[in-house]
Length: 51
Image (cartoon, rainbow, N blue to C red; front, side, top):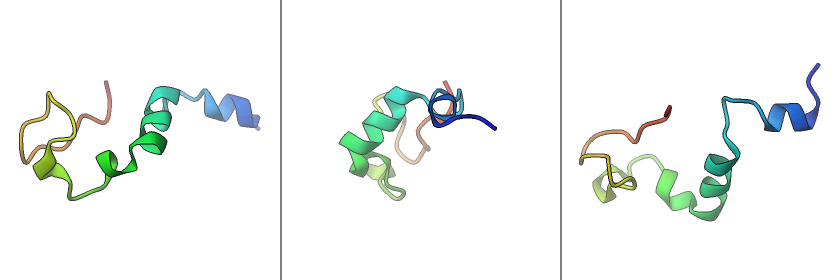
């Protein structure tokens, strides 16, 4: 059973992404596509979840 630290370092959730969500929760709210939260994302597209 993985410890909390190991789960936090899991490749599925990158620490930078987690911090971004905590600092800018509105950026990751569904239905915000018209604001284009990511510069490389065209209007109507979903932001890239995997990089």
